[in-house]
Image 1 (cartoon, helix red, strand yellow):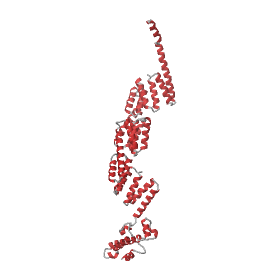
Image 2 (image 1 turned 60 degrees about the vertical axis):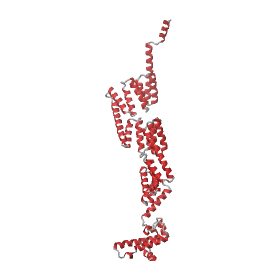
Image 3 (image 1 turned 90 degrees about the vertical axis):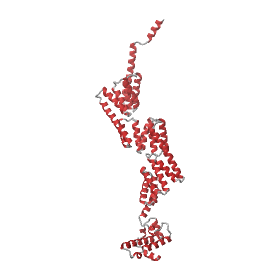
Image 4 (image 1 turned 90 degrees about the horizontal axis):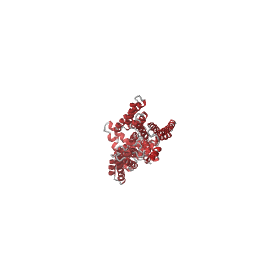
Length: 477
């Protein structure tokens, strides 16, 4: 009975020849899949090539060349991490597989791991010291390492343009390196090139939505564009993905502090507590010198506070700092221009209003520019109010009294015993007093003078009036 069953079981097992025939059949089938994969690869139909190489691997999983071929296909599809796994598997199965080592090195290099890439290319040269591809790729890996070192030093020096240049060169050899792209994006953000930085970060997030570095850069761009609330959301998300992310942690803390100080300053200003508002804006300005747009607004806000406190020169300085940070900041130009007007620095006021009108051609800005131009024109003429020693709101009687006093003071008869030089100076002042009275005592001429119009249009010859200074003097004398 036992013998019978033993023989029965043996009859069910394939003989050695049958097993060999089965293995050969699978190998043949796998080779057929590989050939089909090669055909699609040659046609650049990499997706179909991938499918057939996968079938070959599934059929015969211990063949190094199948993994090598699929790695090559994945590289063409830009799927370097998956390609790296296949290339590594190929050399695990056959350490003498030159193409496998080359592809592993290429994947490492494309992903930015130049050190690991160098080891792979050196292994190729151990197997084939004349391999020109490995020699060139080893040089490329060395070049990438050099750019990395230079970029590291330049980042510490805050030479962000140089870092961007180095990363662009490195990415020519390592196009799939997220680390290089993130460093470039961060530097673009620090240079104020926010759209470019956001584009790089967004590309990475489309491939890897959990990339904490990319989330940090997106937040950084928003933070520097003064969209602080949205920026905080990205920083928080980055910290969820990487709780120890130091840069995201610092940026998040700065963003929250800036937002709070600025809002407190605004509240104090609205309540009329200008001293407190000044202190809060000053504290906010000390939080992060890199946040150009927010700091420009803080300087402008503090300038407004100083103007309310009638500290006009300080207000001008604050607005100047604001436009240094952001030369497109219209509000800062307007605030500074008004301060220039209030301090009678009309040429500077005109220059600022011209800048504003070039940026925003509104009726309001046009009128402000016109007013400044009129005041500038007036400032270059004789100040008849100053000559008579009266203010611009002086009454007719006050003008007459002032004229009488000044005419007596500078009358030539009063200085007949003085030197020729003094007599000449006093005679000049006497004539100016007469001119001033001629204009300011005539309502029409005074109105034209006050509005900045040319008095010559009335046919008025300054210093040669029909009723000269002497007549006025004797009239009041």
